[in-house]
Image (cartoon, rainbow, N blue to C red; front, side, top):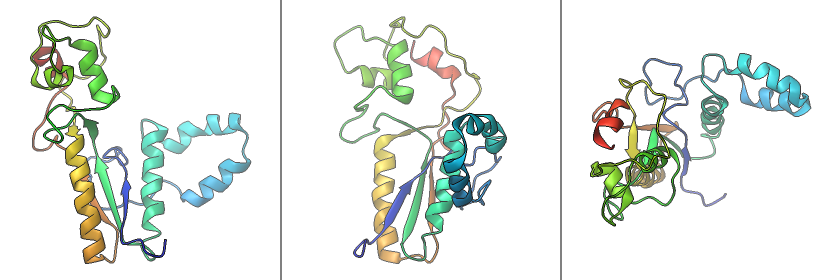
Length: 202
């Protein structure tokens, strides 16, 4: 990678979900990642399954745990690379580009919105899900366990992509001495609560 100008790592806003407040910094990992990798390589799968709950501690799953480890590993390369880390929250359909409501899959929140909504006229289902122009549910998803007051921190995919491009440019041009971290979330400025899905979409 002799001619690499910038390295942009996509993490998640939930990499440090065990913290009350998450700044745009890289936190110390729960364990030293390389030592963990060496240990896992020689341990039996059954033992790994047994120790996993103790390893992840107060994190909800291995996804958030390994994302935290990956951020630290990327940071260790900042001497050789100009590094930026993007932490998006829950990525959903587009805000503006290529057009409002565009998405190419039913993963994540889009799948939930599609499962509970159905257009009454043949229009874009994605747009309907996000503009809440529905009057009926498909019946695929009749119940969903969620805290109605919890923020569903959705971020449009085009916002994440634009930030990624801008972070790559900034990192390549400014050449920061340490890894630059960008939290890419909406919950603090435009909160949407899980309880609103029932009121706005169905």
